[in-house]
Image 1: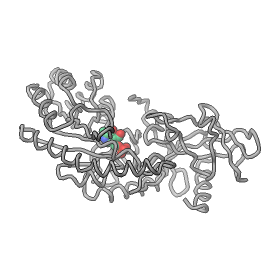
Image 2 (image 1 turned 90 degrees about the vertical axis):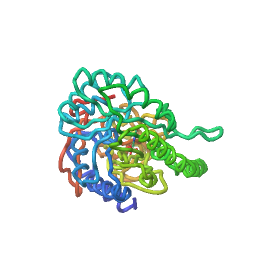
Image 3 (image 1 turned 135 degrees about the vertical axis):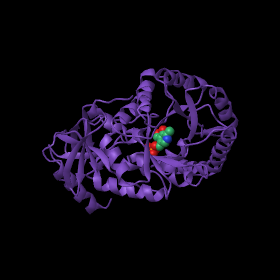
Image 4 (image 1 turned 120 degrees about the vertical axis):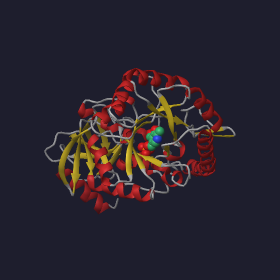
Length: 400
Ligand SMILES: Cc1ncc(COP(=O)(O)O)c(C=O)c1O
């Protein structure tokens, strides 16, 4: 952001939230609109499923779905969440992770009984068996989606994440043959999430060499993954599976995921809020739409200020990149010994425009997690606060 633009945006945000109690979380609706447009353009004509985990706010999920009919359905992260969202009117829900949580499965199945379309993720017989048993008890048939692992083993290097044990077409067929005799479930979907392409940036600050390696590994992986997904789909079709959907990708892999012939939809979540972890990709840049504002409450030394709150560290491996980053005003520098604190966040700043009571705007590392810290998102449009909307937490919903 240019210096003048940053100054104006800081002043606009400051004006917009004047009088509100801090800390608060904000969503810049103009930037969200731009992200929605850019994501749609990147996905060309491919249907886009919204990853609810990276949004965690019903208002925003609805807003994106209504923005364009290319946005179709939600990818949920919990069976209880899918049940809850279905009860609030959402439909076409793909639960992205397997679960053994009977309460959650039942919450979703009760919505299936009311006619909602919900897919349950499986990668082994046991997960399918529990869904089958509960579906039988309710007198419904549940749709299953098989999770195909998308990691790649290079000599001496595992490029990917540890999720599904289904690593090939043969594995997928083996699982399918085991679950086929179950009467109250039906396998009709496949998901392969290439996390190391979609969720891993290739230009992390201070890691230029690593970035080159990541780029190269991604290039080498993409054809391997495309072949794996295609082979799994064809092998399952040969076994008699009739697919309703084949899902792949995430914010960082839209361009490559949509090129595969077997793919029927791409998932996108983080790109809508665009937290700072998504600043480090060489082939796209979305707008920083979401963050949180802290209030300066003291000035411990000259050119040092301390805010109340701020310790919203993201999940994942222990790395400084998981910390929030100061967003506005520019040139706010955290103290490396303290980072962002549970109740106090000190920083250095040489400008003359901050004082006790001023807000400082930060961005979280990840997209949806910030909503676990706040009951509301303050919607800013055209430099004014237009509405406050409830996050999942504000609605009393916690699915972790
Ligand atoms: C299975 C799965 N698919 C897709 C995504 C893509 O989400 P995002 O666009 O937020 O990176 C995620 C995110 O964690 C995921 O777990």
